[in-house]
Amino acid sequence: MMNYELLNGNNLAYIGDAYYELFIRKYLLDQGLTKSNDLRKASIKYVSAEAHVKIVAKIYDSLTDKEKDIFKRGRNNSSVLKSKSAKTFPHQQSSGLEAVLGYLYLMNQTERLNELFQKAIMIVNEGE
Image 1 (cartoon, rainbow, N blue to C red):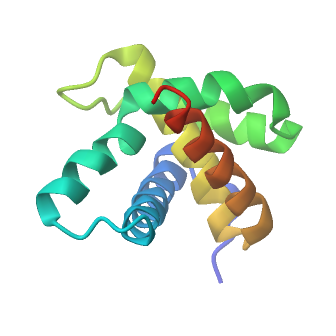
Image 2: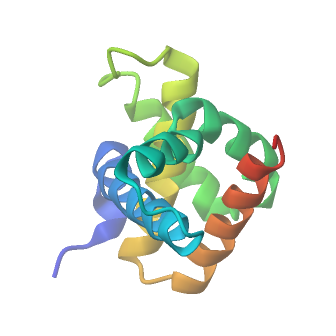
């Protein structure tokens, strides 16, 4: 079995991005959204780099030291591979958050993952 502790930030962000996207999609279905166009539009609010910046600003201080290290690993690696449509700072924050989520997922820390997901939803929904 692979030692997930050794994965770089991009690898952790890769899995974290997928898991977060899946979580948000399920959350939106649970909210009663069923039309594809509505689901796509609603998901952008939660999965955009800008949303991730807001989330990180509110949760960073509550991250454990290990999670902060993972965040920095993901953030620092993201400067190498940057989305064409994302500005550097939001993309780095987004990659850092996704790395934390990926790490927690791979380490089977489901309770902590769900706690962060619930906080993320609350933070994004605050602007409504």
